[in-house]
Length: 156
Image (cartoon, rainbow, N blue to C red):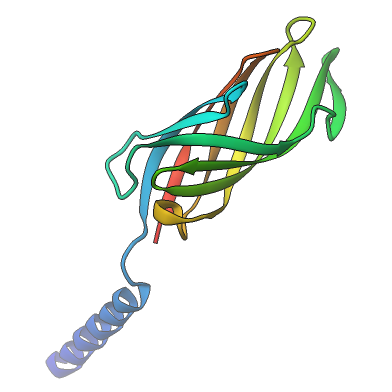
């Protein structure tokens, strides 16, 4: 019985070590916030909210978005405009491109607020090979238009 138990222990240990080795190092997940002034300046500041590989960065923000919604839906009597966008953030530490989907509601003649979701499309520099996503909040006050993005970015 003792020899059988010893063989089982060795076998279990070998399988466990092989599994851990095959998994490789764990990817580092880092919480970040991105403050933007989309109109009129097109600027951003990326701030890590958790210690990790990414460092604070700032620069310009440009986008491919339309003032015409992708579609309009009615929710409890309120019109909601759904807009897709692709944003490119070019900072001193690299370029980050994200895809976003926002849902806008009117709060005045030319003013609106929105919430959305975003996902990393690609990056260069410190943003190379990143994956991640999060949520966003927008205040479109005609001009200016501000947004804040929060979420998790995972580096390899």
